[in-house]
Length: 151
Image 1 (tube, rainbow, N blue to C red):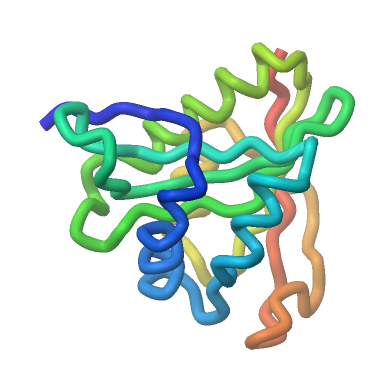
Image 2 (image 1 turned 60 degrees about the vertical axis):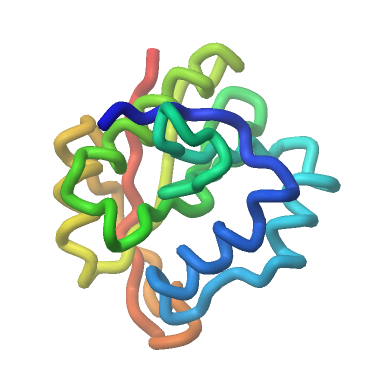
């Protein structure tokens, strides 16, 4: 199957929230996504869809672009589509967009227990730059801070 990337639309939010609920212990609300799309001039969100069905969202990612840095806010692939390299596909798309918008570096936080995500980010050239103790309020889990030079 082929996949495509496109900007997230307000109409995608119900599907995004369903993926959030399957992916994270404390999912973002529909309101949070609506505010990001409507009110945050620094926010860029993308969705992954089957190439032949642009209205079915199977994954999404978001970032803030501030001056020359891109900060990944969230990224998730719906469970039925995991293991198909869609996380890498999405990350490459977000990195390409960040470079087009003149970002020089990209950063993200990831749970210390999320080995799958950490391996993906490391494969994509991200390196650990420290810890944020108790970053995840829901579990008080630490976050690994990761960076990648884009240019």
